[in-house]
Amino acid sequence: MAFELPALPYAPTALEPYISANTLSFHHGKHHAAYVANLNKLIEGGPLASKPLVEIIENAAGNPDKVGVFNNAAQTWNHTFFWNSMSPTGGGTPPAALAERIDAAFGSLDAFKEQFKAAAVSQFGSGWAWLVLDKGELKITKTGNADLPLTHGQKALFTVDVWEHAYYLDYQNRRPDFVQTVLDRLINWAFIAENLK
Ligand code: MN3
Image (tube, rainbow, N blue to C red):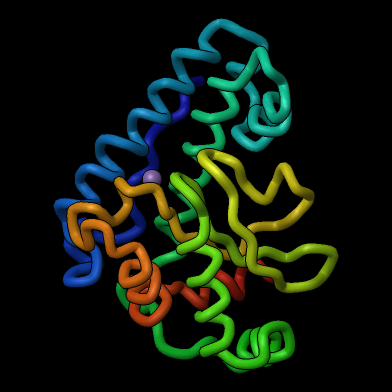
């Protein structure tokens, strides 16, 4: 069965004024949709066609003959994860138990934001910044292009897309402002807490 583009978990206007409906219409309706469509074309009729998305990603990772499958499968997964990493009621402070873990790992909430922003801004070219669970510890990482924590033995907890298509319509070249706004106004702490369970 072919993969389908999942609906956004909120209305296209719900993240305004921080992320516009115009950005979401392109980013979800065109970019994410294209990854799903390309993935379906690449796996159609083959042994991967009936496999779950994560299995396809694991199967194609590191295989030079399956670069296209990996890129489109990983980007399909990454974008769904990114939409859920944000919420119209996000931002502010994490719930108490998560706040304690953030403080223990990074020193403070502000220090977490600074370190996350530094990773996001220093990702050269296209990619992703992540909060991950790595051998039981919270860590901040970044990946290039479609790469994701799964291929590094890490569990993803939260991500920000730092491909230019994620922010250019609203922020032009100001990637730091985009990342700071997501961290201050949109970060979905409930989603992170759920992923940590
Ligand atoms: Mn994107």
